[in-house]
Amino acid sequence: MVLVLPRLGKAELAWTPHTLAAYKACLELDVAECDRQLALERRAHPENRMMALVESQRDFLLAIAQEDEDAIDRIMQKSPDRIRMLREGGKKSPYQRLGIAEIHFHSAVVTIRSQNSLFNGTLELRKSFLLLEENRKLYPDFLPNLKLLGLFHAVSGTIPRNYQWAASLLGFRGTIGQGIDELNRVFNQSGNQQKWGYLREECIVLLSYLETRLAKKTDWNRMLERVTQHPDYTTRPLLVFAASGILSAAGRNDSLIRLLELQASATGKRIPYLRYALGIARLQNLDPVAATDFSAYLKFYSGKAYRQSSIQKLAWIKAIAGDLSGYTKTLEVIRTSDIDDCMTDEDKAAVSEAQKGVAPQPRLLKARLLFDGGYYTRAAEQVSLIPVQQLSKEQQLERTYRLARIRDKSGRTSEATPLYTTVFTEGKNLPYVYAANAALSLGELYERSGNPAAARVWFEKTLELRHHEYQNSIDQKARAGLDRIRNR
Image (cartoon, rainbow, N blue to C red; front, top):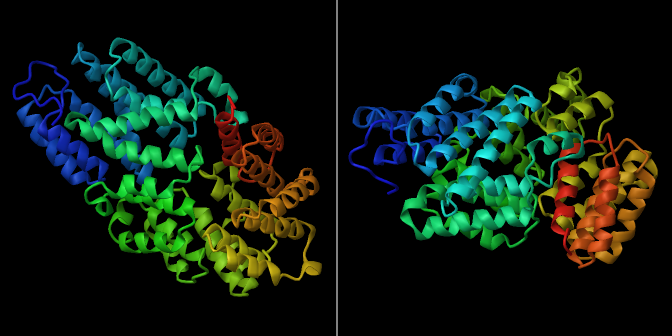
């Protein structure tokens, strides 16, 4: 256990059996058990201010995983009081500044994500970072500092260009490698020292995200082992989420489907996104059963994220089956949606497609989905059957891009390179995403082949292209690429 104190003085800040149990329950998104343990702690140690941090963590996870309006309201309204409670207690404890920093972080993310206030959220992030830095100087050996600091350092160089004013305001610097090293240190020591064990699960989730999305690591077995060695990982929604991200990035779609099918009725209720992810995985195998997942997500999830994307995927299922009128009718629901109100790049892309009013070429769509699922041979077969002369200019560009991606992933990089270049040259002045994706793919290809100078050129070309779909995520990946090769 961590800092288990049988008798607490006034306004202490300590982990006890009940606060640890409450924290564990909140990571499982088990609100009832979390609240039960907190009630027991209030009776046993009413002055233990650690309860304020646990409550904030509970509300934060509910806000992010479920877009729970009550949890969002509690974070917005109660964060000042929770911070005040921590300031009054544990003045000599390294947990004081850390706890306040975490509450500022929770407030920042919810403010940006749910309240759509980037400026106010950035100010909260800055407060969090400065407190963590101050705490690190005062307590250099205090391991929990590195959990959030590692995340800050890893993402600091990947902030998209249109948010660079926010990056300047934040004032933190770091690299992806630095952040991952710090989180790995927390992960390793949380396994070796029992008092830090409560940090382990969050570290697994953060490392899985950073390594697959920003660091572009491909040691899939090692990453999966880090998740699956955790006791009862399949019953813990955050770990299922981490494992699903790794399997998706690895192109192990069949394994992903098996994992999520087992979890759809259990952890899927605690993290509704997992039901959406199951739909995506099934669709990437061209399984029309995916429609039941997207319909269930839309029916049972009251949040905003991935709703337009789910409707788009239902339309795609119609298009794949050759029902183009059904495709158009399905997308009509989101045609008048405001792109600026969309929470994710996937939702923005869905609304953009609906507003264009042009149905996808069925075989191109199948090739895209199969490729995303790691079924490269089947994707290539679909591309080979496409009647090129019947394609529009955009579809011809997409066909070349899909062919380049398939050959790249199949190890035929010498064939992929000129195809990527063609897509960039022909598409850089067109309002489509393919040129940006081609430039990004070339940057990653040259990075893998040990040519950082060429990689840098293509990552920078990626950032030069503006006003395309998936702008934020592509820019972040390009900046992450520049970060990775900075000193090479």
